[in-house]
Length: 371
Ligand code: MUC
Ligand code: MG
View 1 (cartoon, rainbow, N blue to C red):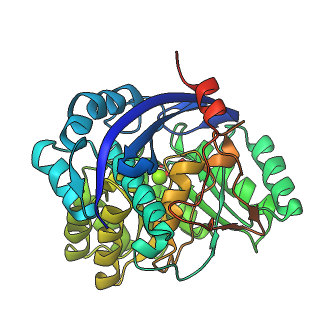
View 2 (cartoon, helix red, strand yellow; view 1 turned 135 degrees about the horizontal axis):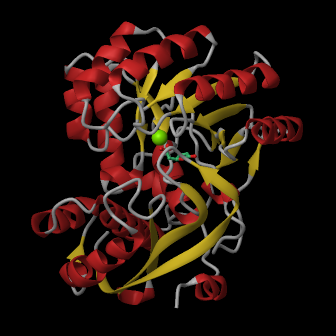
């Protein structure tokens, strides 16, 4: 189904978080969503989101740079042109703009939303069809305080909202991080799956010590222990320990996936639409993983509902052996959609309806847009 893009507008939306969220490289108190409105001929409107973490401390595109890349370069390339699908849209963007996968992800999402609405089909149908309508979702305990994290974990278990938790470590010394992790593991009980995300903070020798202790302590998964550039180090660690390693920052596109898999990496990969350049591009990495026998995990950049739902449509079409972390909207004090997502029993429901299946509350969008 061909669509002519008439205009693209872009807003920076600042929403406070429910509590400080501490990662190894930044502490978040507010999340900035870059929101795209794509208006196509016949009045069809698609929405997309590009979100990163902690300004420029996590990724190489800041919210302000994403907005500027879209307004100055990508929107002029796309407006006035007709596309029959995401393949030609991506080809047009990639022919003139290198990198900038966050910005491209928002545009690919908005085009899929518009195309789904025009065809009367959910985005998951455009991506191959959903295998499931309910996806597992863990929660990240990252207040920075062991006792507060235990309290939060116990409350969420009692409410039945989540049964799997990820801890953010790496900002403090290894001994402190191991004590913190094992205290939470012991307090929440042996049935609860605990994973950690180091966000690249360890050098190789710290990683070797840390992985041995986490493996011994019954932790289920260690995410990105070392620098994203150290591909060989990550491959060696994955072969040396039986605790599985989840590559996150090290695996953005299908090219990274191919290099890791052919090098002998044995762990799992975190898919993120922002790293890859959109839901379709992220699924290309998923297919490399499937071909190589590598497990998958649905990752987040702590997006609001729009970006979370775009990811869920993609994740619903493949088997996620390690579940997902699509809890971003729950970390935000408010959102810009009319109906929030339904989270319960450690799962989230894929919205129904054409396109992404969500309705933007344009008054709220205006209220939270940076002036
Ligand atoms: C990351 O690196 O995984 C995902 C969950 C969370 O708390 O932070 C993000 C980023
Ligand atoms: Mg991570």
